Image (tube, rainbow, N blue to C red):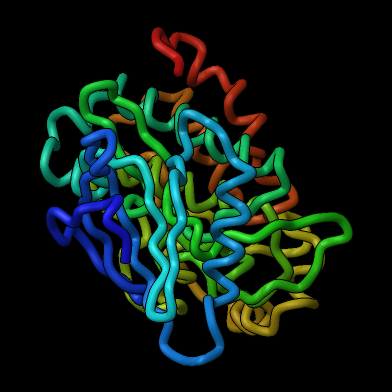
Length: 297
């Protein structure tokens, strides 16, 4: 496509296309190139145009930087800064480091910093998960990446598609088909928080109903007291209430063993079933859990 970037190796793929490590021929810097293939005569997909326009608005240490955009009749190349690995790879490859309480606290703070910045600019990420968080090993910096499902939001809230966020990180309002906004990202971040502590997904099953049942077993079945309007808006909840289903109740603390009390309190606020009562990213940054965080980005 362009002599400016020399492809070095293929490092990933997705429904959009492929990701390569590349070298800038002018600076000799190693970068990441996301190649999105254009399948028909309709031109560049609207999702790509939206991703590029949103990333150009964002400038934060905890958000991956878009450096260049190239396109021709066959594909679009998005060129990003290159980091060492994603958070999932970090957890799997460096379990002792990844499970260090200080590291978890630092990473969680950085994730919330990036998320708070997005929300302050009225941008929903809508697909936060360990694979979409990139890690700089030397500087111990984590960055939000892959804004392919991101979109702007405003007031009044519009009705957005519910088929966003990877299943284990999908908020209850998404699973129940209800309107949603910024709290869906906070829920996903909470699931990532729990996964860093437990080294496995909090909601690891591959079926929406089973994940909902797992949520209910920890947090209880929502009702009009805990989530006003939920039974009238959602037949699934009202049906479950009528069945008077008996749960094998779990304790959130048992699912994230070793997490200090302040961290457990923050996690419970991030994983509040009712999105209107869920803590915001900005509020979470002020939580006592981060009070003794030594090095802040």
